Length: 293
Image (tube, rainbow, N blue to C red):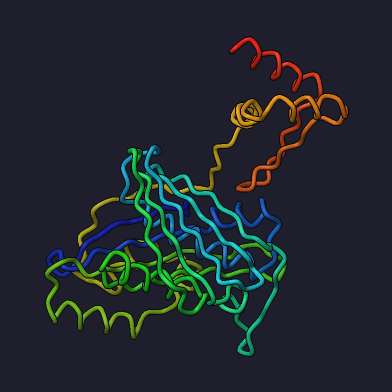
């Protein structure tokens, strides 16, 4: 089944629900960054939560960036997603394979809790909105739930999960977020609390082959499906964009690259794509700058 996000509402509009299947997306991210299992899980959970947040945006010009740094061995975990379902990201240390005593991947230990989750919303306008909250567990889902409550005043249950084989391949990945809307009454709150208490790990449901509508209706039988949106791993970097970046360098820096004869290799931090510019190509950039092109 393809990756997608399904959006729904339940309890007469008092609860909004987002369910996501992101197995292929996380698999491609893990391959791009050569992730070991714990790093893959941490990055995959962050990509999934960010993709769900961005699914309410309208276009590729609007995007959300979520940055997590708990000063654990994982370092910075960053995900960015736009309104057309394009998602990209990276993790500081992709080589982590930490396991808890119960056999589960130790994502919280990898991420750490001495830091923050920062979310920036860029709506394609002059100003951006940035919210921040302290990390609670480093397990990602709890941290996004706390962010929604503190920074956006939206009580939420956030479940994100990634099942990783020991060889690093992704067996299943996805997320389920349900949020109380303004004016939700005690009945709606109690219903969501009951759902949270009996909810199974999302990654297990995805692995079982359950589709997203079925997942939503399992917990919210009266749910009304509002939309289906595709989601995918897509960086969008290009040789042209990095060439433009080189042209912003001071001429002395470009001249040094030309004189040493080694050229310049640029590696995209989001997808690890490599772009090489030889000395002749860098000299051409210098000449274009001098001509005002």
